[in-house]
Amino acid sequence: MEGFAIMAALKHAAGEPCTIYTDSEFWINVITKWSITWEKAGWKKKGGEIKNLDIVREVCPLFRASQATLVWVRGHVGEEGNELADQWANEARRQHLDAARS
Image 1 (cartoon, rainbow, N blue to C red):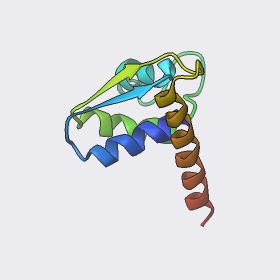
Image 2 (image 1 turned 90 degrees about the vertical axis):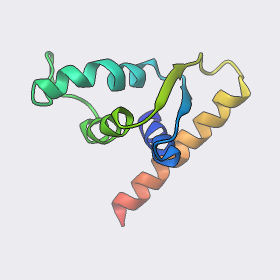
Image 3 (image 1 turned 180 degrees about the horizontal axis):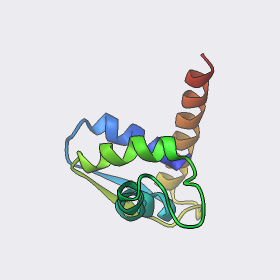
């Protein structure tokens, strides 16, 4: 999942300036726009529950405290960096799930 990959990149950057490229316009919006409103509303939104709220609540403060810039790139068009990012996102998800099961 892209949220885990962004979280891992933010942790790896350790507060240093960085640019994180993602094909997930959804996660860019969650982190930079929607979460601000949700947080002010007590982590609620119109229209139902916030999916992956545990991830949202962890990645958003990391981003806000960072010097990171999120950049959207078109996904699944054979761009080498994007394909590698997909592999890393899948690996981050697997590691998170394995840790949760332990």
